[in-house]
Length: 402
Image 1 (cartoon, one colour):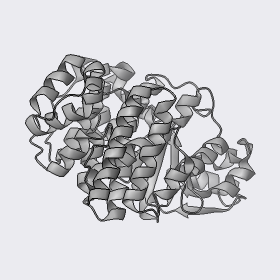
Image 2 (tube, one colour):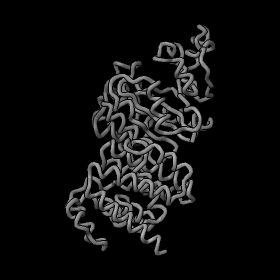
Image 3 (cartoon, one colour):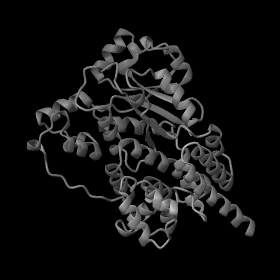
Image 4 (cartoon, one colour):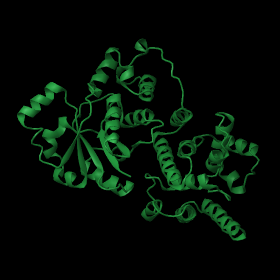
């Protein structure tokens, strides 16, 4: 898969960012990795939203679009991050086909030489120069020689310039001017709910959102119920489930829906877990009674069926048994289990497992991931590992009988 990296402060994310991402995708990339900075060296004075809030706005703005993903590596590092380190991380975690693309606005060309390891950046990534300057600004830079004399290998993107900036948006919000349709709906709701950038109720306009896509609707339900890091895990799982469904000939949209909702009940109480499991007719093991959080997959399946009218048994079964794998998992359930345990933010995963996902048979990949999970749990969660091991043995026995 060909990846391109689009970094920035996203303070806040706006439609210009997504418009640019769309143009990069159209130039030959399969997926854009949006990388919000913890602190931008170019916008040190920008205020109004915390790194986590900027991450949440970004997450809420790309619901349902499998071409976009988010990586919070720079926020986790804190402080100033260097682009060369981010590129190395992306190459190690995502295994891109060829060099990753690096989107660079033409407004940064005259300072790029001062970046840390600028020459190495140009060697490790394919630089994509996007138009950010307006016509008169571009002419000024052109006359000064900056744009024509950029000395590093690059490709120019013939994108349309959208005359909008995060700074302008912050000023508009604070002043009570029109701004709502300059940002994606998800980001707008967070700005209004959290009263970011000086927003006040007195300037709030009524709006009615029509929900046309079940998946996009459920993704926002999930986003609101989980922490930002847990939501990013869910979205990474959904993307990998979708990708694996394409590889193994299953419905990718069903895979994405299962992936995005698999942890939707994660934050519910033990009483809710137990009550939900009592009603699904599958029984409750002694370990599940001792650790009711193991039932969150079954609770999520009940929610999908009873509250949101999702009746596809493959989706429900996949969500239901993603925690331990299930004794008779179908193809989608196996794929969701694999994706949940190996998506890019899971740092205990053996690198060989991610490589296997590119070529291995589904059952071989499933059992490899299951065994890796048992090994990991043996070091910290022995009882859960034993439960998963019992399911693994039951699967082997079932295959021998077949």
